[in-house]
Length: 287
Image 1 (cartoon, rainbow, N blue to C red):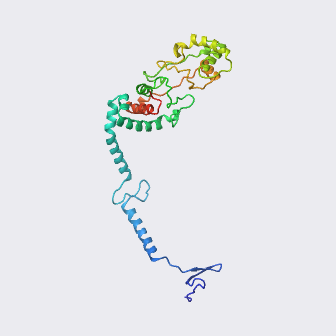
Image 2: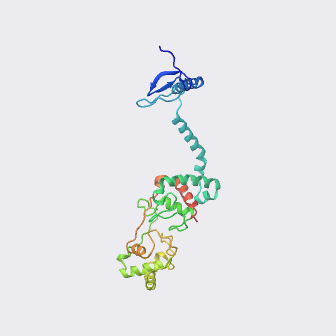
Image 3: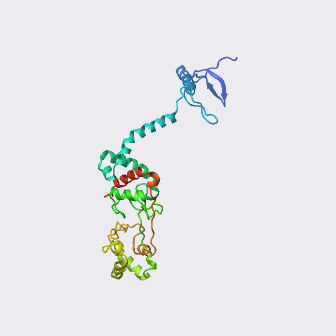
């Protein structure tokens, strides 16, 4: 072995390794650091023995303690089901009006219904229940079939124009393109548009009012305020499901679109339908 070489600048001995004139100092790690490192290695080895750790072909090592995070989660979920059992039983036994009148039950139903809404309803009504073209906004106070808790529950449970449910909400606006003339459609479109805003040709309004009285008032009412028994919308409030303005209204008169909503009671059950009804009612537009 050669004699020990001391670095002239730092005064520390070198290892004898040198790269491009740069010499490696012989600076051992502090003893406390080395001891800590070995402790962590021992801890890691012990951990893999005691707890599940090493992946195998079809499973993993179980560990000598037999701990299972899956089992813990399963137990916690079971405990949660037991804890909420009394609330679920109460919701099953009570009407939605009784649920909304009970602060504790309403809070539970809103939380459960909100979770169900995010899974089943946001695809059409949006994450904030704001709706979109052809899908109603559930935050406002405009309801085709009524906005109290029972009416909302009926709509959720049995749907709209859902053929396989005998209790579904059902009504359809005729295609007036096969009943009245193109000019009359234009006239009634102008009249209906004028009920909530300005129109381009005001001379059509009076003619459209006559067309409306003869063909539309039977469902929408003489004052065009709608009829919830038939799901006929209020035409005076500037809230439009398929678009506003004379052109969009005339298109709906000519060949109306008929939305369909599933009957959720068959998919989610009566309890979840109640919870959804309470949640939707709580959004602010419920009556």
